[in-house]
Image 1 (cartoon, rainbow, N blue to C red):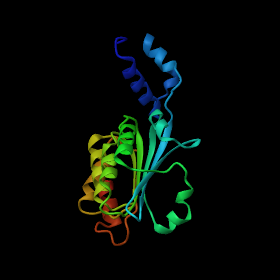
Image 2: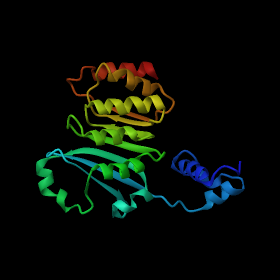
Image 3: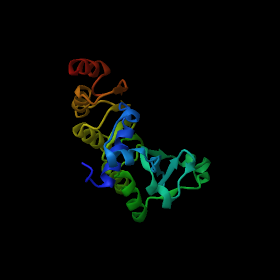
Amino acid sequence: MDRVPIRFIQEVLLQLEENQFLDTQDRKYPSIWAEVANKKRTREGADLLIYLTFEEEVLFCVFDDDGPVELDRIGQFVLDNVFVEDLGEQEEHDWIWEIEELYPVTKKNFHLLHSLIRKPFPCHLEFNFQTDPIDPLVQRLCLAIPWVAGLRLNSQMPLSMDILTRSVERGTLKYLFCHVDVTVLLLPVLLRFVASEKMDKFEATPSDDSPISYEALLNGVIDAV
């Protein structure tokens, strides 16, 4: 077992740290695994915010506990949360330009973000946008997230359905907050999630005009569990 590459050992141990249900302090590792486990974690968590502006420009920033992170430092982090949201004209005028570390999603910056987002750690994803169609680079970034553990949907968009379906099929999703209307296509995916062993929390708030009513959804959930 000690012949496993150190980088692989580091990745496994870092993932164990991310699992809130495992107490790693009392875990015993053999030889080199123990040496790696005893080292201080060098990569801290950060959040990625992606803004879709009214001028069809896409901007982003990465924040850690100390504030904005410079582009040349984002590779040092793993993502805890990814937020994608619309930014209206008035919001831009009021405050967006006060954020110093705000960058456009160019092809060059896309590759930086793609490397960051592809790291195999649990990530929470939140959609709060109505822009349609969404920028192709943003769509590619969202679909590249390998481990969506939590999902909050405030957007009734095709990308929301794609991400949800993938996450349920992969068995990575634990938390789902669904603040969109429940459609005929969405209902079976929600019920599959509710019936899965991975589900820790599920919340749904369809509107009164939802194609599938709250009562019908509730009955489906009861049957699924």
